[in-house]
Image 1 (cartoon, rainbow, N blue to C red):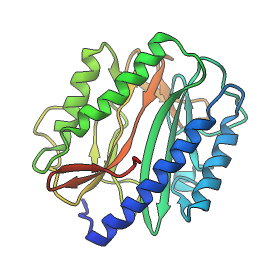
Image 2 (image 1 turned 60 degrees about the vertical axis):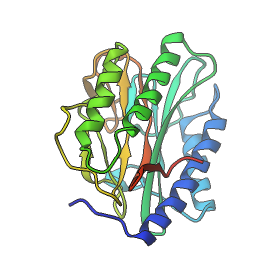
Image 3 (image 1 turned 90 degrees about the vertical axis):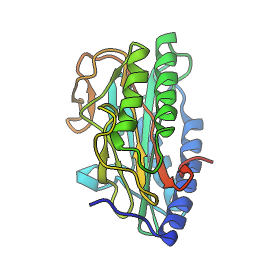
Image 4 (image 1 turned 180 degrees about the horizontal axis):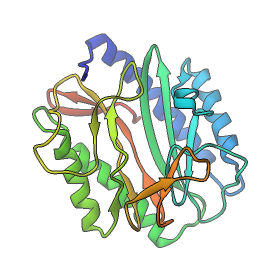
Length: 248
C-alpha cells in the first residue's frame, strides 16, 4: 500500500534526510587507498548515533552492518569487511538512517584516488541518470515515466541499467510501495501523488545489466564482472514537482 505522508511526517523526514546527507558527506571525505570498508561502517554508525538516529540497515533482513559497501563490480548491499580500498577502485556507499521512527536512504559512488577514464565516466553518467529521473517526478506521472527516462539516457551512453533491483517508497519502513524500476514503458505503474516519499536509485554497469550474488552471498554484483555505479536520493513529491530530502 502506498502511503501519503502527513505534514508532521514530512517535517521529520526532512530532518532525517539532512542528517543523512551530512553523514554521507563526512564518509565521502574518508574514502582513500588503505582504509577498510569495516572502518567506514564503524564511522557511519558512530555518526548516525551522534546525530540522534539509528542505522536503518543493521539487522534488516539479517544485514550485519550499518553501511553497504560495494566495490567495483559489486552493485549493492555488500557487507563491510577488512578489505582495504586500493587506488583505482570505485566504491558505492549505501546508507539509511532511522530518525524519529522514519527512514531516509541515500547512495553515492566515489572514486578511490585516481581511477580510469571509463570509471569516471560511469560515475558521471549514473549521477546524471538520477538527475534525469528526478525531472520526471511530478504529480500525475507514473513510476515508469521515471524508469523510462533513466533507461533511455543510460543506454544512449552505451551503458547498462540493472533491472532486477529498483527504487522504492520509504517512510516507517525502509522499503515501502511503490517499486520504482530504472527501466520500462512510459505511462505504466503507480501514479505519483503529492505527499509520496520515494527513493530513486539508478544502478548502472559498463557491461551487461545482468546480476548475480556477490562473494558475501548477500549483496549483488554484475554477472560479467564489469564495473557498476549507484546513486540514490530520498525524494518528496510536491505540488510544484519534487524536493530532494537527502542533500545539503
